[in-house]
Image (cartoon, rainbow, N blue to C red; front, top):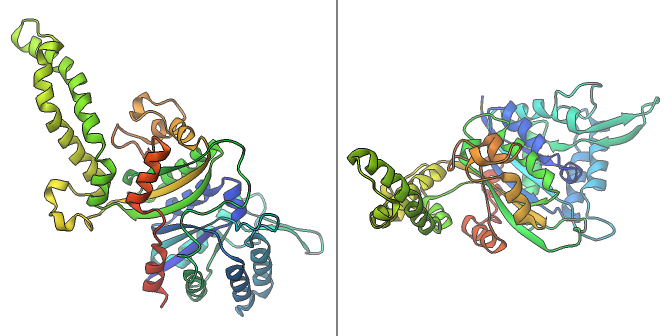
Length: 386
């Protein structure tokens, strides 16, 4: 089977109803495909019109369904008539063998079986007809390409707009009153080491904050990025080692030599060792996030050395930083509250499923380091859909 590039567009209604995580979980858990790109977009009216026309003109024996989807695109994807703001669409790209068919099987057709939730559309979509077959309500949850040819045509069209109309986007609905903030959530590599519900389920938990996803980027963090991203932790780790190391060293020395040694006695030693401890921990953090220890990578190669996969999400809303950090829970999963992200999905202080910015200022710093607004979809589309 040939390797292909398939797409999933998560519809504005699905996003607004906070079903994004559940949808993503299905595709990540029920296929062996690689999620290679994620991008939030505000499709302009021109793209909406061209996309609807493209779908309507397909002559594959599904003219009724194509017309229904084209009408849906015209209505649901067009900018908000009252505010003029474009809706949010999340464009996901999946790569792998027989990718288009695998995505289609998980998605399902638009005419739904009753009392069944096997496919994405049967769980998250709606298709209601009256007795004479007139469609009363239609919400397909996501849009996908049913064949390789149609998927490629759609991706070629959208690639003309991904850079200018994607990145960190606007919301078509007004935000609640209050101090708006943007914050970063970074889903760590432990969520992407095989087919799994983890990443989608974490996004689903985060939806309980009532914040809006306004940015997304799937990427591999480079060693250079990780060094800059986690650089500030070195000083805090050094200080922390003095506090915890002095007591532990005193206890061990007391046991070893059979006379009382106090934390004050070992403080000077731990101050000397603190930087070494912090450096070792820093190397381990970078290795976990990138797949490489900085000490083993030439300086010239650090900007490209990257093995591990991450998903960056930008959330926006009132008190976004505090809300996200509260639902993530303590850095140490064993101390996090039950029901929090880290308690449910984390393993230890480093492998704790997700990072979140600790202030609006640090969020902006982190956006810049990983370049959240970078368009990675274009390169993938050009590779497969020339």
